[in-house]
Amino acid sequence: MAIATARHILVDSEEICLELKTEIEQGADFAGVAKENSSCPSSAQGGDLGEFGPGMMVPEFDEVVFSAPINTVQGPVKTQFGYHLLEVTSRTD
Image (cartoon, rainbow, N blue to C red):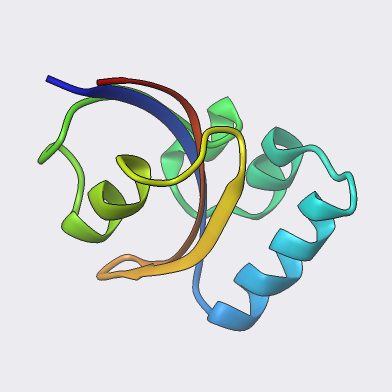
């Protein structure tokens, strides 16, 4: 079974999500941006979600986490919780 590690930033709007993505793409530290902006409790760990397998997160997350290139910021990804920026930090198949 595939296992991935990822980190994310959760915000209320697509607009904020896109602004933060631009900041990160221009060199801002993902963990720092997560700590300052993410409404998820994982923000204390810089958005780190740890290890998980398929089906452990919402389907929208799984779709990105198990297909996106590693170490590339993805998003905005809309879920029932809000808008996420996602970065897959490792994945085994």
